[in-house]
Image 1 (tube, helix red, strand yellow):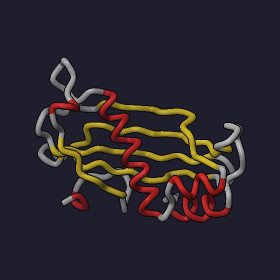
Image 2 (cartoon, rainbow, N blue to C red):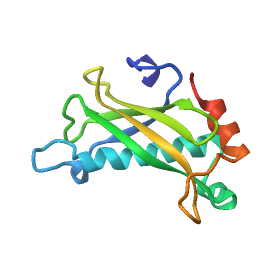
Image 3 (cartoon, helix red, strand yellow):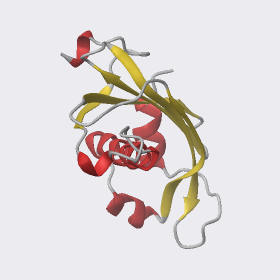
Image 4 (cartoon, helix red, strand yellow):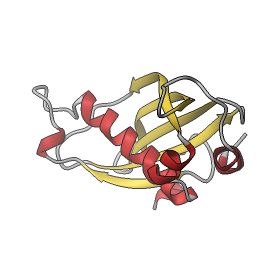
Amino acid sequence: MSEQLPWKYTFPFVQQWTIDETHIDHYQHVNNVAYLTRLEQLAWAHSHSLGLNFENYREADRGMVIRKHELNYLLPSHLGDELYCATWITECDNVVTLKREFQFICPRRNKPVFEAQTQFICVSISSGAPKRMPPLFRDTYGNACIR
């Protein structure tokens, strides 16, 4: 099903998300914090699928931390909606930064309901200072970059 949806780019990493009561705000829409939480979960799941996990980050004393988010709420999502949530690495300078893009589509409407971009910067976990990506990050994230 997900391969037939109007994705922004080809070959998305996709997970399904069923909206339940915990995701709903007082407007009866999905809460913005729920979307942000889903972004983080999706990014980690994609990294894990590429073979990187937090243990690799600890061993290298490096992490990819968020520098900037851009969140675009296109259509409301409601209780019971099924969303297909996709991510891609769209830029990687193989030095210190990478960018992920996200798109959440409601298959019932066959339309995107949410899109986002996140810019990450590589830092030393122990100091928090910007650092060059280790070879494992460059190889993994660089090779997964779609551009």
